[in-house]
Amino acid sequence: MFHHIYYIYILIYNMPTQAKENYLKAIYLLSRESIDVSITELSKKMCVSKPTSNNMVKKMEERGWLLYEKYKPIKLTTKGEKLGALIVRKHRLTEMFLSKVMGFGWEEVHDIAEQVEHISSIVFFDRMDKILGFPTLDPHGSPIPNREGEVLKVNYLKLGSIKEGQKVKLRGLENSSKDLLLYLNKKRIKLGTVLLIRHIETFDNSFEVLLEDNSTIVLTFDVCQSLLVEEI
Amino acid sequence: MFHHIYYIYILIYNMPTQAKENYLKAIYLLSRESIDVSITELSKKMCVSKPTSNNMVKKMEERGWLLYEKYKPIKLTTKGEKLGALIVRKHRLTEMFLSKVMGFGWEEVHDIAEQVEHISSIVFFDRMDKILGFPTLDPHGSPIPNREGEVLKVNYLKLGSIKEGQKVKLRGLENSSKDLLLYLNKKRIKLGTVLLIRHIETFDNSFEVLLEDNSTIVLTFDVCQSLLVEEI
DNA sequence: CATATTTGTTAGTCTAATCTAACTTATTAT
DNA sequence: ATAATAAGTTAGATTAGACTAACAAATATG
Ligand SMILES: [Mn+2]
Ligand SMILES: [Mn+2]
Ligand SMILES: [Mn+2]
Ligand SMILES: [Mn+2]
Image (tube, rainbow over all chains, first blue to last red; front, top):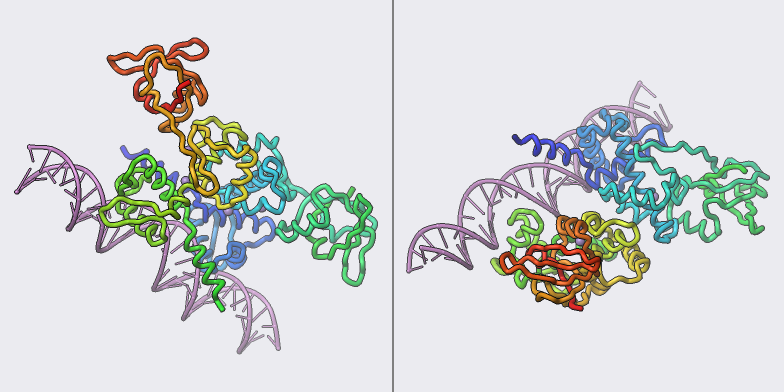
């Protein structure tokens, strides 16, 4: 008699809220940059207290999105991993749409996408995808997971690991902070920019780099570690 | 010493949450179709119980968005009216963007806009506005409030009040329910469609209407009351 | 190894937004 | 004018998501 209501209840119960979507995404992203995801790391990423994320992690385990044992690191289940990837997909598709269709700079898109990623309409993102011609990378060079939540493995090198005399192309960023993006704008560096390592200063590890317009710029080692490049 | 924190606190406190934005919009829309907005009307529009909206209305009064006395109708303040109008602005700009830029049908846009309207980025909507060429009407013919929350007064007639023999153009809809929109799609009627009232059946008040392609259709009086037209 | 530090957990509190049950006030109909 | 009905309110409970204070477990350090 009330089977329908029961199933609708289960459906709604299993839908992540906006907060839980942000946690899922954070855990997903943390787990692909470090082996172990701890409560402390998650708290930092989410800007919440440790009891808050501890509590949230317990609730997410109940929903079958992750495995958790006291004092042990957090592991996403297959279901949780897919959910996380699909939120990242929505985030990065949005960034691409904002950049390519709406004309926003790569330093403007993240904050808007942070909100748009929670829109539940599937057709909305599918339409973005279609209009963009099914892109595989976002405006910062990060891969866009496909509809199944699978990610293309990209294998770029940090500029910091490149030897003197080598020529490389900028392909991605290790961190896409607004500050870094604005700095790169100022230096006229964007995805695809060709960089020739003219000289590496042994004293402070700074890189003297020749651009295609024959201008030379100096980048600190820190900045170099944030730039993902491909040798050409 | 802590003045900054205090001001940030006040700022955040005065930001409407997503729920409160929906209430503001509901009250705003109700107050422009009826003189008095009651708790019961609001509860129905919001699909919540009467104690829920009663309680919410009290909180909104504290924030200075409306005036409320027990057992009396709800009146938006100038501030509340503007806030409400600006949410409607975001909603209708979004609908227009979804329709004109992303290619969605007029029956698809409302549900998506219901979520997008809560995005807080001002530049996001300003960019939509610019890309669309600063439209004044949404895909259903409803006016888009300007950045100050002011609305262009439109003065259309219900098709139901038009006399036999008259020629009119569809300009808007009294209600934009998905069912009505799908029905109009099926009858190939859209905004701008020219309709000639061939005959009004006295028995049931149904309208026999001639379209520009010389086909004739019959519309019930109910449907005619939902169509806002301009005589030509 | 013992202690200090970091990490994680528990317990208890708070606010926003919702509900139901029970009651009161206002309106409508006889 | 009274009774019936509708509208509005109060009280009390619940859930999600956050916090702090206090304590416990694990890890690092001298
Ligand atoms: Mn981003
Ligand atoms: Mn987000
Ligand atoms: Mn709408
Ligand atoms: Mn909404």
